Each structure stands twice: as structure tokens, then as C-alpha cells.
Amino acid sequence: MTSNQQAPSCSGKEGAFEWTAFRLETLAVYDVEEEAEEMARFLADEPMGPEWDDDPWVRSMTDRGKRVSRIHVLTSPLTDYLSYELAAYPGNVTAGETIGILDKAEQDVTGLPDHDFWLFDDRDVYRMHYAPEGAFTGAELLPAHRLAEYRGYRDRALAEAVPFADHWERHH
Image (cartoon, rainbow, N blue to C red; front, side, top):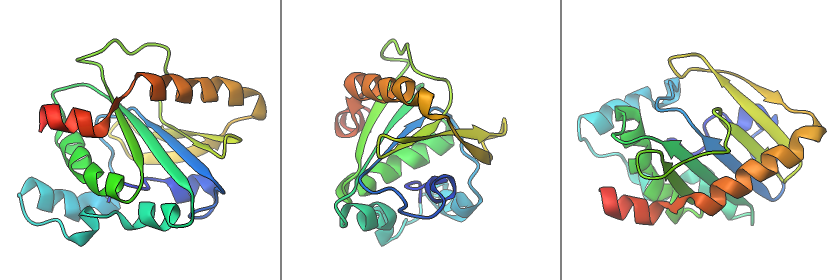
């Protein structure tokens, strides 16, 4: 499932944040070994299973009063991976995640980094590192003096993104 790509590994343990987790996603392809079988089923247009209707990881966070949100910066037309990921988002939204889309083919996207990051509880920023093919290679905890910069990125992304439901309705 696409809900928690590397969240546990960059926070030390699953659910380590107390209140909020924000993710900015920027890649067109993520090479996540745990998703290979599920993505193959998706591409073959096979049933995806009940977890697609209500994402278990997101639900486990929101049921404890935690807020999970993400903005995905992408460019249409979508890669197969992004088609798969966006098809999973309705289950994440049902489970309580707030998701927005910034489609560079539809709007000018400036002032955001060209890399992924997680911002936990407004106090810990992890820059995510990936190999060129999208394989996760590690997370870097950024120093505290970078917090204001990344809070600004989050705020800009949230302000400019189209809510996922609106994007999905227009493109699906």
C-alpha cells in the first residue's frame, strides 16, 4: 500500500510522531519492493483487496487522533506507478488522510523543493533520498535551523494544492 512509504524508517519507529505527519512527494516512480505484487495486480486490473477501501496504516494513526497529510507534486500524463498510487488514495482519504495534488501540467508550481520530505509534529524534518529509479536510499534528519524553511514549503504546498477528490473527479 502506498500510505506509509518510509514513514517508519525515517521516524525511528512506526507512529513515532505525536500529532501530525506531513509528506511532500515529488517523484514519478517509487520503487518499493513491498508494493511490487500489489502494483502488478493493479496493472492487470485485478481486485486490490479491502485495505484499498480504508488504508490500515493511516487508520491506525487517525484513530489515535493523529493527522496525516500529503501533497503530491506530479506531471500529467501519469506514470504507471502514479496511476497506481492515485488509485490507492481514496482509501487513504477514507481512513482520514488529507491529500492534495499539484499537477505541473495544470498549474505553475514554484517555490517548492525538488525532493521528498516528511515533517513530523512541526519539529522534525526528514529529507528523503532515492536512487534514480526511485528506490529509497535513506532519510536525513535536517538540522533545526531548517524547520522554518520546510514549514514554509508545507504551507505553500497546502495552499496551492487541489484537493485530491477534486483532482480525481476531473481526471478519473
